[in-house]
Length: 318
Ligand SMILES: Cc1cc2nc3c(=O)[nH]c(=O)nc-3n(C[C@H](O)[C@H](O)[C@H](O)COP(=O)(O)OP(=O)(O)OC[C@H]3O[C@@H](n4cnc5c(N)ncnc54)[C@H](O)[C@@H]3O)c2cc1C
Image 1 (cartoon, rainbow, N blue to C red):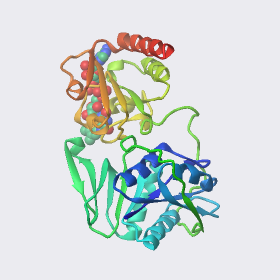
Image 2 (tube, protein in one colour):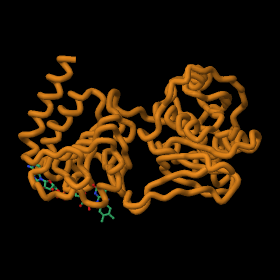
Image 3 (tube, rainbow, N blue to C red):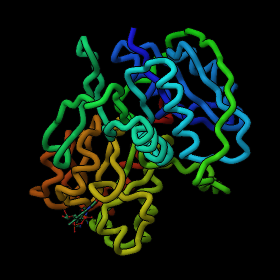
Image 4 (tube, helix red, strand yellow):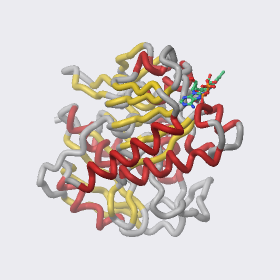
């Protein structure tokens, strides 16, 4: 069976959902999954990883500080030792830091933000969006190992009910780059890349204070993050971390609600693979409606409170 090494991020031993999806991606290609975890509480992640399909968990301990280049060398050594055919990490900030470094150590190319992984008999092939999502490319790796990051919210994190063998190793400590401090983001705020529901606002919201209406809708859903178009980020209405699109984040939530966003090609590049798209725009001809599954033609400032009320009522009757 093809061995696939997956880098897993965790919070105090609890694997993040994007990493469990990454394990799911490896399994979708018929791979036997070896998870690599590092940092405090790494061993506590083993049970959850076994439950989601990892057969082995390699825990790197002993390093006082996190170093992405040392970690990349450790990950690459696991790949080489096991003769693995692929190395995967979720396309999160950390995954996008580690995976290219692993590719560099292994001297292979990096496939970013893949949306499918399949066995081709002799090897593996990954699928990713090109040209802002207008074309889909199927790619292999020119080297022996396929290194890729997986797009969050695309692959399923399956509960297989299994358990994993745990192998402990000492982490390399001679990194050139060292992370000395990590600042936790405001508690309770979901990241736009990981949230299953994204409610995003654009210039059609008219003023920064009107984003309170968008936040009310996100709060009503309970599992939603707020996103933004570049126009409102450039205007200083919203933080850059919320920007969706070609020069922002790429998201693929279960539900994407675009409010007062025209649907410029650069915005679509970041959200067109969302499962269900709802657009609210006062202009029935706005390009966003071409990619929307459901559309509401109306004034966002009137539609948003009504939608929030409806979501709250639905939740109350569940
Ligand atoms: C190199 C490059 C990279 C870029 N990267 C990105 C990117 O990453 N992300 C991104 O988003 N953009 C990006 N852009 C910018 C992009 O081209 C658009 O300018 C931007 O997406 C427009 O933002 P918007 O839809 O909020 O504003 P607008 O285009 O001004 O659209 C506002 C929309 O709101 C509607 N509206 C107005 N009033 C109301 C109301 N009361 N109720 C409901 N609807 C209303 C209007 O009908 C309109 O459709 C990039 C551009 C370039 C050149």
